Image 1 (tube, rainbow, N blue to C red):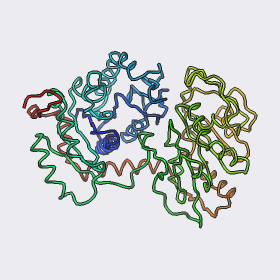
Image 2 (spheres, rainbow, N blue to C red):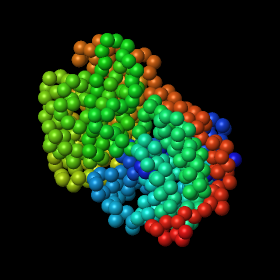
Image 3 (cartoon, one colour):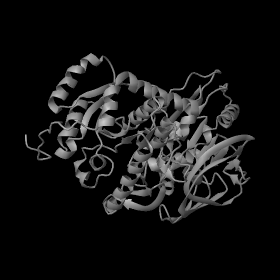
Image 4 (cartoon, rainbow, N blue to C red):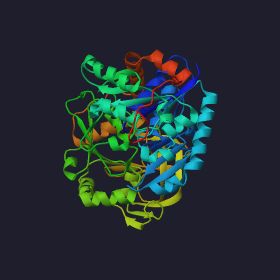
Length: 509
C-alpha cells in the first residue's frame, strides 16, 4: 500500500500524538514502511536527532514506533515558547530566530515551502506517511497561514481523521463543530472521526455517533477507551500539572518509597527527563510548584527551562529558592538538569535568551554560565560513576568556569556537570535513562536519606517505552476499523462528502 493520512484534533491534547504513534507501530508491525510527520509543532519537549538537529519529542517517539531513528525530516518546523508572546523558531532542526505571533506570519511562505518539500520527500521514500496536525483545524482565525492542519491537507491532498477527547466533555459538539466551521474545500477532506479516552459502556455512546454520522455524513471509525497505563513521553509541557504524579509506579521492593519532587517551572522544557525515575518500582515522582511540597522529598529535581533567567526569578519569588538553599546546607539531594543546572550556579551571563546580562544564580555550585547565540545540539555518551551513560544536549549556556568536581566524563575524557556535596547537575538530558547509572543513583539517595528502599534490578526505560508503543498499537487494532483506515490512507478522502451549513464559514445550507 501507499498513501498518507492527517490526524487532526478538536483541541490540543485530544490524542493526536498517541493515535499517530499507535498507527505507526501498527503499520510497522505489518511490515509497512511508515514514517511520521508533523509540519509544525509547538513544544519545549524536544530531542536531538542523529542528523544534528532538534525536533519535538512526540515525533521522536513516533519515529521509534516506526522502527526509525529520529530525524529533522519528521518535524521540520518547531516553535519553542520562551514567554507568552515569543517563541524560538527552529527550522529543519536549527534555531533561526525568535518570533512573536504577528512576526511569525511573515515567515509563513518560505516555511510552507520547507514543509511541502519535506513531506514530498518522505512520501517518495516511504510507503505511508502518518501526519499529525497541530492544535485544532477549527482555529479559523489562523486558517490563511495554516501549515499543519487543513493548509497541509489541502496542499497535499490528504484525507483527515479528526480525534476528540471525550474526557473533556462535549465531544460530539466538538467533532461536528470542527467540520462545520471549515470552508467547503477543507470539509471535503474530513473523512471520519475517532473518539478518545472513553470510559464505560460504548453502547451508550453509539446513538450519538449514529446521529453525528447522519448530521455530517462522516463515520466514526473507532472509540478508544481510556487507558490509565499510557503516560511515558508526554507531548506537551503544558500537560505537566503541579501536584500531579508522574507515571504509575509499582510498589517498592523494600519497606519505603523514594519520593521525588520535580519543580514545575513556568517554562519547563524536556519535562520527560523525570519519567525515567517514575519507571522504577517504589519511586514516587510528583510535580510541585510551591515550597511546602519539597519538605518530605528524598530528591528534588530542578528540570530544564526554555527561559532560564525568568524561571530563576520565579524560584526566588515563590520561596522555592530559599528552600533549595536550606536543603543543600542540610545535605538533602538536589539534581539540576540543563537550565536547572545553570540556575544552581553562581553567575549567569545572558545576553541571548533574556537579554538581562549578568544575573546571580543560587550559588549551590561554584559555576559560571555564559549564553552564546548558537545552540549546543548533540547526542552524547560517556562514563559516570564507572558506568556507561548516554544523553543529549540542547542549550545556549556554556560553562566558562567551575570549581566543582565533574558528574561524568564524555567519551573523549572531557568533564561534564558538577557535584558539590549532595547537589549534582548536568547539561545532559536523558541521563537518567541509562538504567545502570539510574539504579546506582537511587541506591545512593536511599542510603543518604535513610530509606529502606531496594532498587529493582531489571527496570529498562527503553523496554517501557516500547511496551507503551505496543499498547497503543493494540488499542488501535482492537478499537478502530483498521480496514477502513487503511482504505482511507490508500484511496484518500471520498469525493462525495457533504458540505455542512455554517454561519461562520458562510456555507450555503
